[in-house]
Image (spheres, rainbow, N blue to C red):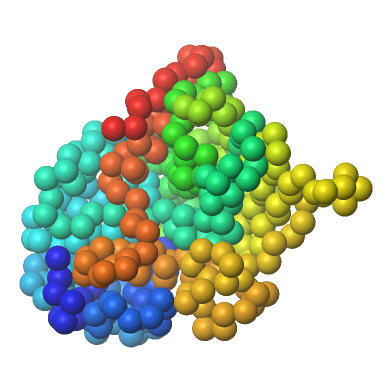
Amino acid sequence: MTSSSKPISVAVVGAGMAGRSHAAGYRNVNTVFGAGLPPVRLAAIADAHAELGEDAARRYGFEKALPSWEAVVEDPTIDAVSIVVGNSLHRPIAEALVAAGKHVLCEKPLAGSMEDARAMAELERTADVVTAVGYTFRRAPGIAAIREHVRAGELGDPTLFSGRYWCDYATDPNGPLSWRFKGGAGSGALGDVGSHVIDVAEYVAGPIASVSGASLSTQITKRPLPLGAVVGHNAAPVSDEFGEVENEDTATFTARFESGLIGTFSVTRTGFGLPNGLFFDVLGVGGRAAFDQHRPAEYLFDDAQPQARTRGARQVIAGPQMPYFAGGVPMEAPGVGASNGDNFTYQARAFLDQVAGVSEPLPPCATFADALRTMEIIQAVVESSRKDGAAVAVPPVA
């Protein structure tokens, strides 16, 4: 572990949409949750697109931009690195960073293939550094609060988890054929946004035992080839030539949790008018809780009131009574909001708490093993879809 008196030097590989979120998180880690973390040196942002990397380094106060991830590996002054690039690159970068003795926070999904994901989980088992995966929704105060309600039995015996992640970033048929549209079944909407809602489901309601009734579909089967770099979900200049979309735009499935709880799931990247629509409901015999990422500063809660005439879902506003809020925002008062950027700050702080070995750390990040499990569930969904919806067991939690 890094000495508590020595600054932690951090870098980000990838200067796109999510990479900038990691960079902003590192910049803010010492502004939240009080003392205990050493100073953080913002060392470098690496991206093959030089202009993009230089702009991100300038915006977020990093010392320099580097032209490649290899340059980060070769820099002996860098202690911890976020990997925020295409999924197929996760394994080689993680392996090189771990071999160089650097701590790794990898964006989800863990890898571009099951073979790579298993190799990364095995790498973690023998690594002498911190390895973690970026499931930022675990840090949302409302989601963490709902998890506490469920774990405390405040909803009674759970009866149903219904999770959806509906996005619209792929609704434009003229959107470029970026790496997000390649990789085969399970690597599209399931891998991109489905991995988040699956992780949230297990985080809130416990392990999934099997999936069934799966169906995958692609609404836009061909897309124009880009003429240059594509950043995040942004539009980009395209050619007159089209290529085949290799993965799913939409997927639905059901699940049975180890507890006996039933789950229903749907994910899409062609959901018109829904920029970032993560929603879920948890129902029990004695209550209900619901979260909507489009309204991240609140959640709904309902339970048995003394009189039936006063029952009904009530809005719970984010405030210091929720996890992460106290000490996590400049103005610690209910009603001042909550943001996706805050989640990245909390995640970066949790990761660096692990790296520094602080005495009172935030809850640790998800591991490579956790993210492998999510990919195993996604693989089971794909298998169910190929078997006309037949039930497929998920490997038990190790």
